[in-house]
Each structure stands twice: as C-alpha cells, then as structure tokens.
Image 1 (tube, helix red, strand yellow):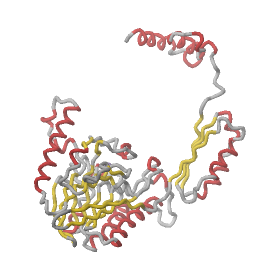
Image 2 (cartoon, protein in one colour; image 1 turned 45 degrees about the vertical axis):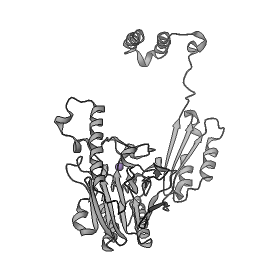
Image 3 (cartoon, helix red, strand yellow; image 1 turned 180 degrees about the vertical axis):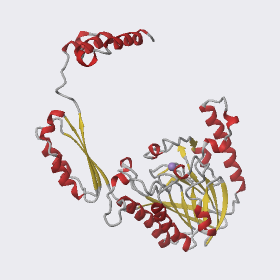
Length: 411
Ligand SMILES: [Mn+2]
C-alpha cells in the first residue's frame, strides 16, 4: 500500500515575494504554489498511490478569494476524478471563527463523494483502497473552545486550563485507539504543534490563534504504523527510531524567508503486510521549488562599499530566485551608495528587496564623562546623558530623573 502525505499548502500566501502577471492580473507566487501542488499530485499518479493524506492549512486563512480556491480545487479534483481516496485535515488556518463557522475545506465532503474525507473532528475512518483497508484517525487543530466549556474553565489559570485540555485530549486519543482493528494498518493524521518540533514560520502565521503543544508521547503510539503531521513547515521526523515514524511533511512551497534553507516536498509511505508482520518505509521527496536567497553584506569597514555590495550580488546565483539584499552600513557612507546599480543587477531575480541597515552612527557625539573608568552610578550616567540632550529632553528631563531614582532605589 502506497500513501502520499503532504501538508501546509498555504495557497495564496507569499504574494509579497511575487509579481503581477500583466495578462492575467494574478500574482506569480500563486502559480508557484499551484505548480508545487500539481507536482505532488502528478507523483501520486505516477507512484500509483492508494491514498493521499493532507495534513492541513490549505490557505493563509479560512476565506480565500474564489480564484485561489479554484486553483486549489482544480488540483484536488484530479484525485477525485481518479477516485483516489483523499483525507483533507483541518488546520488552524482552515477554521472559520475558531471552528464555530466551519472550515474552508468542508465543501469537499459534498463535492467529491465517497472518495474524500474532511477531517474536521477527531474520528477514525476505515478506508477501502485498491490495496486493502486502512484506518485513519483524524486529529484536526484543537481549539480550547472546542474541548472545554466556559464553566469548566472559569477561575482556572492558563496552565491549569492547558492541563485540562491535555487530559481530555489524551482520553479522546485513547478512545480512538481502542476502535482500531490491529489486522489492518493504521495512521494517525494530526495538525498540531508537537512538543519537540523545531519551529519555523508557522509560529508567526498563527499569532492570532494561539494553540498549545501536544506531548510527543500522546501521538507516538505503537498502535499506529505512521503518524502524519501538519502545522510545522520544516520537514522532520520526531521519532528517529521510527517506532513509529512521527513525521511533519513540511510545507510544499516557501511561505517566507524563514524557510530559505529548507527543502520543500512531500512524503511517500509504503506499507507492506503479510500474515505476521507489517513493515513501514517512508521517504521524503523534494520538489523543485523557487529558491529564496539572502545576500547579507557588512560594509561598515569598507572603503568602497558600493563595489563590495556589487561583488556580493554577482557572486550569488540569483536567476529567477526571490532575493533580499541586506547590508550593514554607516549613515555617512550612504552617499557612496548607488542603489540603482543594485536594482539593475537584481533585475534577473524573480523578485527582490533591498534593505540598508544603518548601524554604529559615527556622527553621534561621544560623551567622555561616560567612560567606564569614571565608575558612574546608573543615576549619574543618566544625569550626564540628560544634560547632553537638553534640547530634546528639557520637557521630560526632571520626570525621567525622578522615575529613574524611584526605580533604582526599589528592588
Ligand atoms: Mn498550521
């Protein structure tokens, strides 16, 4: 039995790294994401997989524009047409108003008939594939409000609430495990922040929907042959002993520069079974995605900062990549810089940004009285500073000193 596990598609994100196609009016990064997804599905056909598991986070939010939904649906429709069973799990970005308003993927349950399952609740499904039955437990992104009622949480601290959630969750997972038939393979498909993961961009994407971490031991259960995870964009196996494999497939395209150095792709799982044993093999398959490149140069010590930056650009493979140029520079060197020349060189990128970081302002007057040898108290140092800035601080100087005195005299 062959299974394709992909996750965190986030179709419709990274638009700030793209350009508008003048003929369609569409952002070029949408096409990048469509191509990445399309490659996954091409491979599903080529590998003749029996099942596709999507680990959640289809779009940046639960209400993508119709043309983004259409691009997503067009790809998954290929699986539906071929009657390849597919499970679409709900991630935090897919839930509408914290799960109360349904999820962006719910429509697929009605559209794709029996071959599609939308995992918006904790449940275990037995799916008949061309290579026999398999059991899939779905564990979508869990919201506090989905597990606990208001009276249950009143008067409790955040830590106590989290403990209560984990207790409930453990019982819920236990109940699903008890439903499993051990003669058939079983996979747990979860969208979660598992304690022990190395974090990437997803922690910034989720600022408005703070979740909690699920301990690895809850999920890494021997009753499951493989644990398929979504949420963290960095591909990784949390159980290197593969007992069982607990794998984040990672995102299929780069959402931002925090994913610059990572390979993007999907996981192919193969389960072979005879009367006595079940054997699970999995492999990560990298996709040929657009490169992200950071060119970082420090020219603060350079006599010819322009030439140094030009050289840094020229020594980097920037063709069709998303590039950001960041250079550290003193403000008074700024007259030596011709940004137009950088822009000209960066034209062959797909998209670029240029960001000077002004550091170590040499024009700033040093205060010799502040020298370490003078053994100043913090309050004396503040007095010297305030005097040196009389013009700017005259309105607040007295208050500053008074407050500093209070702060410094307390513990
Ligand atoms: Mn997520």
